[in-house]
Image (cartoon, rainbow, N blue to C red; front, side):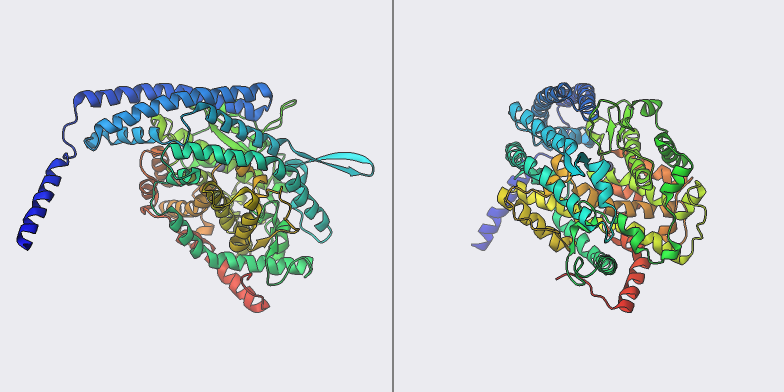
Length: 616
Ligand SMILES: [Zn+2]
């Protein structure tokens, strides 16, 4: 019996094996030719269309009038029609080719697969409606101002010009204003965006499901091309949690001293309004929290202003760092076509962004730029995007993007890790009395941690929240409740005032939610930039702790960075990562190593002062 059964199973197995076509067998030459012809045509047309489409969006975001808005919407119609047709052909070719593609077709096969990846509905009306909702939400975010009467005179408070500066000044005297600015922004923006967002969620899910994704969040996650994305992220968060809790406890202790027990509970959650408009990063608290206040790092903003730096000078200084390691110069058109200050009579999107219009036409939109240390960091961040655009500009259209979205966000920040060290700032004349001793370094590390470490949990919950909303697990009447649940759990932060009004939509008052920009990229970029930095420092021959490393002038480091950037999305991101770092995995080790001296100092400080960790 057993023998017969075995014979039978072996027979079935042999049949199965012989019926699977062998890979790498010669593919019909006609099909291969068809594929090449299609990709050639696709790349020419997509390039042209992408340029037109990006130009329409550029025109709208730098001048938000109805005419420009209508043009972006009609462009969306045109591009979705083209994308739809291209997808159909690409799908058909993939089906015909099956698994018979020879290895010299790897690049073509990857392009075909990327062309088919979409969350757009086949119904172009729906795609247009989605685009329209995004521009409505962005316009609410960008145009809202708050009316306030002071001594019978009416004032209009705008987010960037007025509310954010108020939020950055944390003192006992300013507490009333902090709470006011925090509250009015949410009250003015959230309820207006909420009904649009609900509609938007429904629409994008239709498109995502039509294309075989569970929902729109699933579509976002699949961009990363790894099976266990959520676990990978949660693991990194767990590894980072110890350091975060120590920074949280130190911040709470300092704020408790500064603002009193009625505002800051010694052991509990911190109220969000003292941590900036979104409690996103806590850099504004540095001056009140420096470990060694007498050694505090001089404010480079003042030096820049004394030296009469202007916006163009900020760009040129940033550019000189990139070129010192052998990356590209900015083309002339970058300086003539970018928008780096407000233009009379134009309402524009204040939020800084970089643009790739193809064929080397790269631009920066930063109309609210000023001359400050914050702007200086932002300029490096944005120029990092532009260097990426220039490095992969000769790739086929589908590969002209980051290895994953986090890579794109990490490039400029990686460079800024070198630029911001006191030694380099002294070299470019922004610091005069840097001594570089241990106390000064601890101050520097705390300053960095308030920006980078404080940001880690925040950068995850924006999309954890959206994943749940897109999956239909969080309904509109639970938007705020779930948002604050995550804030408490991951950040140890609570709202300063009750949030029980049903119209409120606090997550929606954050730019990337209103503008529908995926946010996990920023989480990844904050881990990746330390991996990049460490690898580049090693290549540059740096010795000693990485928080002292600048790769300035190291073309050895720059060449390797370029190798990774030039790939664009040609290979899955773990392979791109390996080009620079030698490793294919995301790792928290470099960021933890970077902050280790600070972590040790925080431990000692906590023991000496007897305060607790955690918030439960
Ligand atoms: Zn960016």
